[in-house]
Image (cartoon, rainbow, N blue to C red; front, side, top):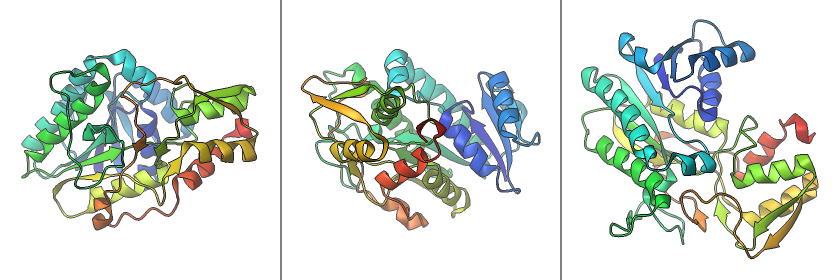
Length: 309
């Protein structure tokens, strides 16, 4: 299968490139703003030279794709905040690049990395298949922009029912290759352990669900080989996780020191979310069945971090 990868410099894309490259039937054509960075990484990880990297401007010169996977996005809360309103243009422009191709070549399937933020929910409760997106149309704030951009892309995809398009809503993703300088909670925790400093976090107990490279790759494989359709699925693990349980586990296993405080901590780029996970299990229809809980996924990935050994 000839697969175009959009946004090959993102960490999730790199994890998936390595996973997809394990199948000798796959030929990967990677597109990025910084091709030199992709080529350098490709050599460092020993990726075969048969998998090529190009600038986005060369996309239309490579016309034969069986699938396109779009990983273009902000990647972490700090970057999301710094991008501001440009998140609309970035999301739209690269999405349009893929949509123009599948309109010319309708047999090509398109997989778009969406986000749980597309629900535009307050996440007072976990979302499910009956959750309605609620947008404060008369008072849209910068924290809404990311979710609205993803929702808009999903709406465009559902309007193209005669095209094979899958949206995968990612809520939380963690890999041992993740950038630990990002401002996700798990990165803050691991930096505190590495630097032997006290993590300060709010008293608010929040619930999250995590997937890792194995789970996302399993879902992408199913989307690549499923019967042609136009659909959206939510990512989930075997069991979600609350913050206080995560802190206690990291304290017991890795010596994390932490203090709970009343003031909020971290970067809040997309708004406070008490229960940022989904009970929507539509992905199971395609054969997706995660084997690990969110905590097990985190511990499995952390076990590969040499700095914590």
